[in-house]
Figure 1: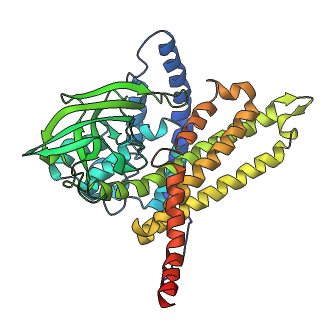
Figure 2 (figure 1 turned 60 degrees about the horizontal axis):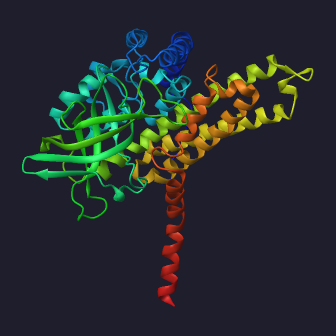
Figure 3 (figure 1 turned 180 degrees about the vertical axis):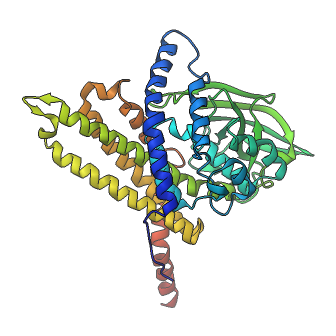
Length: 430
């Protein structure tokens, strides 16, 4: 049955988007510039760049006071937690309503953290919210929602092509009433934060099971014996302090078997429930960041003069600005359609749309941000503007949560399936 599509903002989404944008403009962007400079200075003088900055905590307290806290909480799954740790009377947002809010958060690297709506914490909290036991929620979900701790997601491995999860070498083996963890993970998002106290670890429990039931997700206290953050990894030179991406080893880590989320063998099911909305969040934040970069390029183009003219009047830049606007608007509508499809038909019916945006939005962002860097000349590649960091984020998102090639494979498989089925039927009849 065909259903009407309406991408107009609900009154609540419009109000929250405006309030988040005002907060980002007023409280976050000035703070971000100061933090970037301070982190660079600490690195230069050999000081710890990962320490908690009290100014972030102050901004978080103000965001919470203004009711801009845990806005990612999904409609229908928030339960009593939204009233205690959420906003607006405890009602969660649909994917379509949250999308424009996420876009405004994306204009700043640190804004999602200040609103307690940053990756990987949002995804980890949604996993615990939807699949966690009550004990897991009490121990880890509540302090995450309260902003008292941070978390990491431990999935990708350095020794295998992790875009195919069946390659995983990490193990989560059940031994009586315990689960024993051994493995090496990297690009473990969130591992660098001083308050990172818990990780969600995905590993093989039963290598003989079918490919969708081999793996489990396990809640791992990051200070447990045998858990070691070996190093922090830079992404195209960016460390993403204060969160970052770490290489983590787990050596004979023994935990009660009740640390397995939802029971053994359910990791694929949980991952699909986690990644659909999460990819909408990623894409809308990236659209917000791309809009910010385009704003900077427009400002630069009318204030910087070369060869006797503003940059806007040189080299076909006017047309390039127009093309950037068209690309961003197309990408936004693409994501809103995917969000609407998720809300209307669920994750299983939205596989193609979610994979489509995961390919389209980072590609668009890379193009537009690259143009913004070009407008800024050498300055665009350096620390005085957020453009190099923005490009690193956009480029890395072409790999995070699955590389482009995997998502293109999903889209093409779904496209070809009915035609292949028809061809088989015709062949059988002949």
